[in-house]
Image (tube, rainbow, N blue to C red):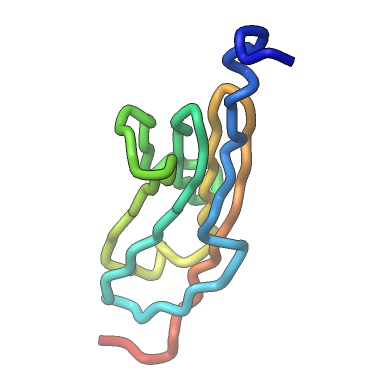
Length: 110
């Protein structure tokens, strides 16, 4: 195969979630927590954080980053209603991937 025969699809890298990897995060009520979704992909993937079916944060993939690694951080002060399962999803024109993290509350309160 010649380089001239290649199409742009030959250079697509699936959206791959590096972190989180379906884990559990223990938090303290009233503390700050940052959920970070780190994704590799080209073309630039869109990244979303969901709590249940509710979209809570989105990265529209408009920025170019080093080595095609992109991230979306979601920071908040933990309230009781924040506990539960959060899903990070990443997708580009070629693929969709999802990963989750579960927030559980530590017995210590501020």
